[in-house]
Length: 143
Image (cartoon, rainbow, N blue to C red; front, side):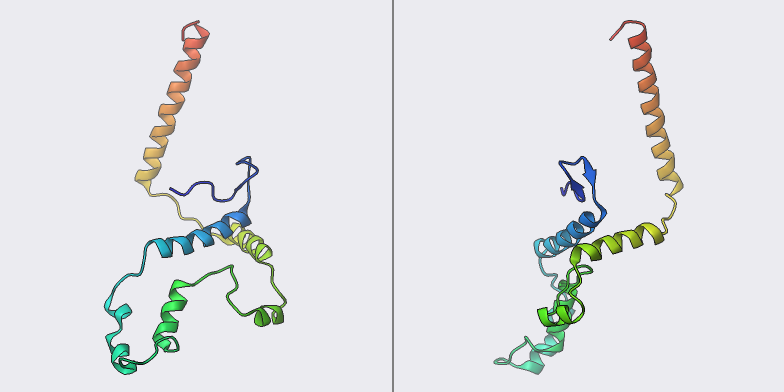
């Protein structure tokens, strides 16, 4: 279980940028933990035949595509330092705040399915009933 994404100051506060950064880091960890999915596409028999027994695969387009799938990030900058500096040396934290503000401003949430909302309403009603019963017992001197 992953707990505490975005929490700061011993969970007394929550930070949007921190949540986005931690989410990206956890995505990378989960990719490693989940391993490599063995599929016909990943095995790439046609590439093996093309490259041959003593060939190298690092510079092959298929390898690059696989790397890009495994290493896709939205906040981390995977370019070389020279390329990063040439683009103005964007700060990852600033990028995270910009993205979080964009999400807050533009995200369109869909309503919960009716059955889910009904179940949540029932849970809340049960909670309210228990609170009322507890207050009633406390008022009458019982515990």
